[in-house]
Length: 294
Image 1 (cartoon, rainbow, N blue to C red):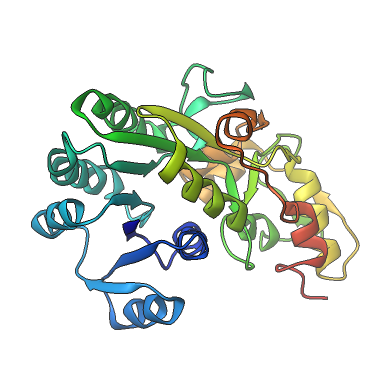
Image 2 (image 1 turned 30 degrees about the vertical axis):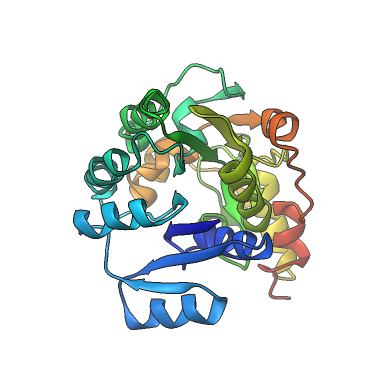
């Protein structure tokens, strides 16, 4: 299959690119900058120069490819408008073709609790914008598109991503790591390489209109995450909690998402797509893997 990919240099997108190439697909990947273009070419993709603000380019890419995977996110306050415009361009171009379109959401849209794909939505303000777009993608199945939404948990790997906001948090005067929130909230997690393989499976196997959580089944507490990060730095695992006000002052709108207490298994992707996470857990990654500095 010839696949068009956005976000191919990001933590998620680069793992998706690798998984697609490992499965024998060819990949045309969008690059805005020279450095991104070089990184994508080095990874084995065919580079398409341009950006997500070019609807004509996106529509033509959708028509030319056998499948389309969207992982790009800038976290610059424009992702909602950018994703809506992308869907305006891509979905009509794919209508009636039966081609797959794989869209990225996030597990935070479900709020706190034990979560599976049927759990009602209760997003923090930060991610509420995703819900109407996710619904639009899934509804596109009625227009002859094999549309799929994947909602990843906290993605880790290569020393990158949101875990660093815990690892590199502020310290007390006596050196304890200050956690976001109480530290007793659970985070759903997934290794980037496992997630990349989930996207590759969804591209070829997921049913039209389907929705899958991208989570490993590992749900550590934030306190455990902080302690693992300290062990990875060769330090005594001493942490202290933060109040809601302190967390918000430090992290802004991200505080509401970081305070969610979520647990999930990812069983549907295992059962329906034959997906099996095999990479190290976040705690292992922090203590003795890609985040460790000791």
